[in-house]
Length: 227
Image (cartoon, rainbow, N blue to C red):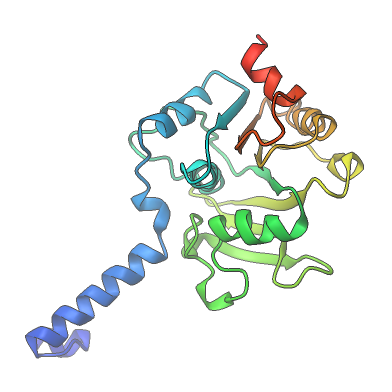
């Protein structure tokens, strides 16, 4: 009787396959719930509680972008896990996420946060849970790219995320006050300081995730030798 009400198959193997399929669907569309950072990633997150500026610098394929995307999804949704020791925002936030070009922002940053850009049916398989994606505005001139995304916050309101790139110059980084800026790949120094300026009013945070391909640049020097 219960199986009929739930429309589940009566065959044990078919039932097992159905349950496995549903479990995979829930995991794929709520990836954030299963995020388990390794020690260095967790240390990076925790530093946000006291440090306004952070850099996670490492070789390729060490989970830098994954770490950055997971943190931003946590702030956007307000779904702070029990182990979280980092910065907290009690209300919906305004955030920017950026890469070097509009295309790389779409293919890397947007992909990690939302899901495959070209497959709209798979949006929600990134770190922002599918149930939290409320609305979006497409980017002009870049196929499948998102300009602005509305994200449901646990408080009942909506956070706003805008995707940016370095290629358009510092002028495109002026304007609104922000709570969080995530920069994936090393930015030019003038854009980095413009990002910091955007968070002055809110007491927000700026964090970077990249491999130091430009050597001892001013941005890298700021973290390795500055106060």
